[in-house]
Length: 362
Ligand code: PMP
Image (cartoon, rainbow, N blue to C red; front, top):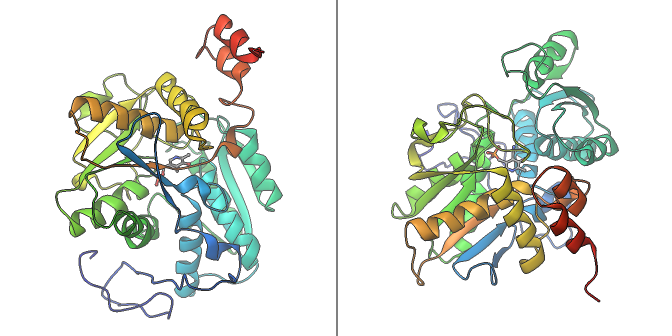
């Protein structure tokens, strides 16, 4: 499995038939990139300076499509191509909270595949517009419908796949390329950028692909690195189960948390889970913008809130380095939490706070 050193290179189209896990080594040296998907990954690691001095941010929001999920969008397509499963003009169908869809649609646009995205209603109009601009067809599904219901984003994708010839679901919930791209790249980048000096890594979980790949690789490189998983209040991904006592309920942060355990989520290398609610998430997302100049989305606030909690709870001292992964950018939420009015309308700030924020001091 993952722990074997892989002598085969995906870039060269080689594959160990005994191993379900196909690794990849990419050429990152070209000054002029072949196409925009070559720009995916290699994101910068940037110090947090004002909220705390202990953290460094892995800036996944700086990926060309705006999120960490660009990585799997590209990789799942490249992997399927190498397996000979795709032909130009084929239809890719994917149930997603939006960012995987954007990553897939970006790669599909460059490579000439058609794209259908099933997207729960709760996700922002900005994501739908970005998907349509990339040429994807978007089907909206009821947010509250359980994943195993035929009307859910997962259920509708399966029905469309049955109906449409030459269609494929690459399936981020099951596809080994999802955790593997983070094992091969995201985790290695973090380790190298830190020169091996990593104490804690904080990662929020949706499919759990990012957390699974990063935790496996970093534990192999240095078992002392502590992995912190982050799960929103209302989801059931955290362990132990008592942490999820508030049960499955709706929340406004997008892209993280589920009402089922995705197959790609392997929690065995996660040392500790932290739960974060909407008010904490949006508070820290707005502080990341206001105080650090980092134009991030809500799940980045979730991760930052979790980092602040563990610094306090575990009494993490000055010499320690906490890496916080910031998954997506504010582009997805320009009509949502970045707006003071939206924050007030959704009960996250008071009317007085809203008026004050909307009024210039001068
Ligand atoms: N944050 C955002 C905004 C996302 O869209 C996603 C992907 N659903 C995640 C975090 C979590 O990534 P993963 O699916 O790898 O757990």
